[in-house]
Image 1 (cartoon, rainbow, N blue to C red):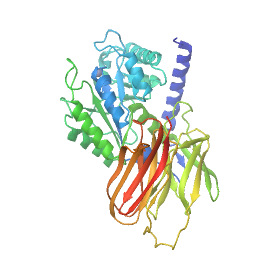
Image 2: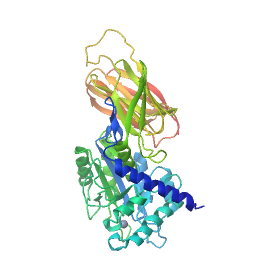
Image 3: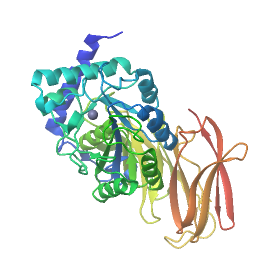
Image 4: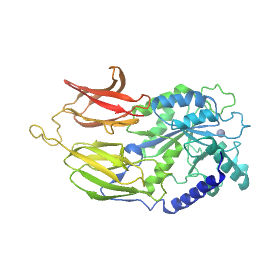
Length: 448
Ligand SMILES: [Zn+2]
């Protein structure tokens, strides 16, 4: 049932949030000197968003399953009018939304805003958002893409949306100059048409800590009339490239990245207490709770005697891991602004045998993953003493290999790797390391 009263409240709230945001965007971050908020989730170098327009059928049939395989989420900019040539498949879109993909607006009629009066723009903005919110449960429509890349009345768009996508073919800076005209790269035969061309834009974004937004329409050229089709193999190759550089690229929907930027720029981090084995931290922002719910990644130097950490927020376990070298190690964790106190619990290093020289690890170790149990991502740390070939693999309880996390030469020292089990079912898994003659496994639990 459609509740218009509730909808108006939400919209009013969004207006207030936008106004607040506009007035405080650049000046409001206050972060305790000890702490650092990541430019992008996981301290990765760039944000990457894959966006698809026009409801072309292969997007649900081919793109979504392909992204699911990699555990990546995309954005579907949807035209909502039932008379549009590719009528929205609401049940298919709902299924995608339930898996974490973003369903956003591409107006009602695929309108060209450059030729529309404000009143008609308002109808396109408002009605498409309402229709999506009525059909899609579990998420709110917060972003829009301009058909024909024709930007609208920015102030009016901002009354309804947190961000709007244009397509001027540029990497977006860490904080966009204009949220109502976020640039993207047209992909396919009218734009970037090879995986190499697409990857070079992602690399460019990484070099400036920026955001690379891809814009796609039809896939494989099997949808007559679809603008600038691209082959699924090209998309697949870029996804593999992202996966091969997990520390470099944060692949996330357009709306998720938008929220992260706004949270990051508005957040305050302060420490209220610390003891030998725990630190309590407050992470807040001025954006209002319940809506800006994307975890920020934050780090602080690891207290000297700590060897592992567990991070809790509001009673739940948050993603956390240890990064850096033996001389400069960080406790890294995720926290939702305004999500309650964050407690970092440290476990003290157990000294075994003779003291080693600084920065020269003398032992091999495979640490317990954090969080554990997990869903669907977790971090695994290991330490190796000598340079050499390292293999770290995940097995199910029947001993079948389900993932290879490391399979390369590594330098001595402490390393961490993330494991995404989005494609696996709940249960017990084992991870095993092999480095020279060192060989050990540990148990972890996936709960979905
Ligand atoms: Zn379009």
